[in-house]
Length: 622
View 1 (cartoon, rainbow, N blue to C red):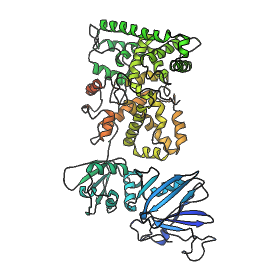
View 2 (cartoon, rainbow, N blue to C red; view 1 turned 60 degrees about the vertical axis):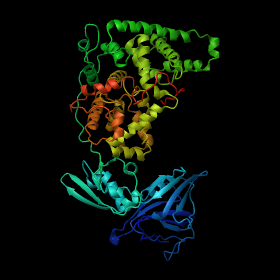
View 3 (cartoon, one colour; view 1 turned 135 degrees about the vertical axis):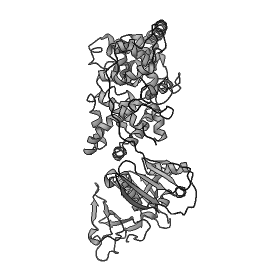
């Protein structure tokens, strides 16, 4: 069979028998091109049973069982237009086989079997000519819709900076009336794409056919386009007749600078005679921009973590500390007083103790505070974690929590203060360690949304390497870069993040800053899934915290200045409820109200109830 050259969509598929194997050939309509330009491009697959061929025209293939007339083909050969394809079903029975179903159900097609793999490459090639979407009723079935090829290429060019040199804002004006049609791709297939060049800007105009059958709500159309064309946002204007679709322009990333750490004298200037902290927004901004000198951390961290209220006096803090000391030792006595016989009948406490002892013996042992045998620091680390199991019965202890406690105990040098500061930190991090790990899932999704906005090309590259879920950032998020930075840099990063500035979920922008620094190497070296994971893991102890914080703040300011920021991104960073920063050089004082509002909220954007309803433990991936 020959490809259907008069089809609406010129992409056609031919399957032909060849030496008891099969060949899959893609053929495209030659159009008006000269025969000399109709070159054949072949992509050999890694398996022996079939190959993918891209061609600009149909071409006869000579073989032992296909000689003479081009119509004399194997009895197993079949051909059809991709536009006639209704669905593709992928099944597994020891190997993968694919069931192709045409819109004309009276014409059954044989199944395609992939005994040596290659089904994914087959589907990836098919996606170049058709849109495959999962059926709502059957997850193994992919529904096929075929856009006009010229339009598809135009959209690819619209989103690819390398093809036409499109700079800054790319815009597509589309009649609102036509966008509400029943089939968005059918309507878009009538587009006449024209390219007009102007100084520093390319504009693609689009005129649609006015024939419309059914109406869809504008919100549904926006969602459909958002899925088909990542990175585009639809601004629904009330003006009749038009809808404007724009690719978001973030503008130039501003340059920012870091400052020197806050000193004890600076801190003292923000206290009144009774010990109350004053000008707290300015104080937080100073901590965010430069961090704290080490001698100040023991006191300042208690305020940053919420152990001490900012408005408390010296006397109120002394009273609070006495109360918290009594409460701590009451809880410590609970597990200390459990006899060996009782513990034999308490498997949960026994498991907690065993896991804590293992983790404590391998936590920061190169740090002088924890090094050596029978180190008192290790005893304190163990006792605080065991007492936390009494404080939070539902969560208990999960691997990785010792990494969060270690820097706090190192700074506090006091068992009680370290415990309550750790409790405050765990209130922020709690969902990371719950059995369902909802906090981790949410943060990975949010990080993917931010990266997609900041660098669509890099996000698409990661997606093409099966790394779009950003699982290689899992450890970064779980224990807040504890294993990625030197101990001193961890102290600096944490105190900066505890200020709540310059936005919510600032740690996600820290991730974006690191990835922004590494994307060039990852893409130029063409790293695959394993290489990306290996490269990210090897960054441990090689990162410059000041450079990262500087870049992350610049990213925050760049996103904040965007006029058409997508609402989900604004929600992630807390911009939807905060007034925009009036000063383009910093975000400090203008965010004070937002930071105050976030007190008590955890750092991944969720609020945690005082009593955790979801019990169980998560798993830490080292």
